Amino acid sequence: MVIDSGLQGKVALVTGGGRGIGRAVVEMFARDGVDVLFFFLGNTEAAQQVVAAVTGAGGRCEAVQVDVTDADAVGTAVEQIIDSRGRIDVLVNNAGIVRDNLLGMLDDADIQAVFDTNIGGTFNATRAVARHMISKRSGRIVNLSSVAAGKGGRGQSNYAASKGAIEAFTRAMAVELASRKITVNCVAPGVIETEMSQQVRDLADEQIRARILLRRYGQAEDVAHAVWFLASRFADYITGEVLHVDGGFKME
Ligand code: NDP
Image (cartoon, rainbow, N blue to C red; front, top):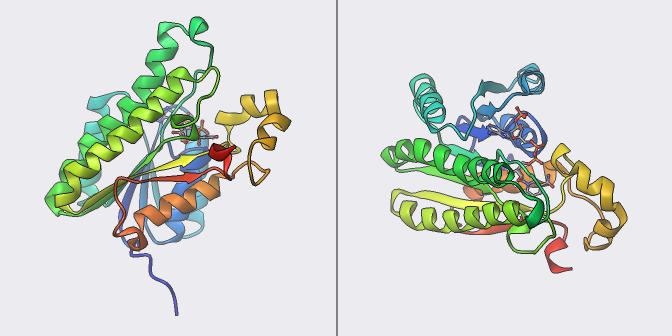
């Protein structure tokens, strides 16, 4: 007998779905019969590859170029999805950037860009989508935090602060939206093998691995499984939580 996740036929919006973790989430949802739309910033080739891979495998997928820092653009794109699909059942706030440096070396632009994308983008997409979920009295929101939200890391003050804000935002939204049957949770990855973590892995490969209990980096699919779980009916009774996918990194 097939196990039913409850996701088949649902509509999901994933921000930053063209590469890395977002791509794995898009592909995982599509394999489970979800109609997936994703935002990307500027890497059109990568986005097209995702759409081709998903549709080539018989899934439903559409890429939309939207900068999540632009609230108007996010709002317009969400309304277009509602016009064409009628609803958004799942929102994954995944788009994120890093601009690591020691505090004294961080310029204003590095601080602002990280806040605007990571927490500003999460606000913009959630505000645009949540009102439609509220009217349907159902929905799932999954936000991408990071191990950095709870574990101090040199050169990550801007990034860590943005991810800590996402976790606080998640708890506040869980309270605000619970009565409308919308759950809001976080997934907090450790070091995952994507372009985002390439520089840090190149700089301190052995030292980092030695601090991960499972002694390996995570794969984008490891994170996608957790996102899928929180979006599925198996997580019906979970809200306001942070699910760590870090191989035990936070404990070392
Ligand atoms: P990547 O750098 O591999 O991919 C980031 C994606 O976000 C890209 O598709 C990019 O679009 C998109 N994006 C960036 N800025 C914007 C924007 N302003 N508007 C729309 N889309 C945007 O990142 P990861 O897959 O590694 O990370 C995904 C999430 O997971 C992030 O929130 C990150 O902070 C978090 N995370 C990652 C970890 C890791 O080790 N990789 C660890 C902990 C958390 P485009 O392709 O067009 O450039």
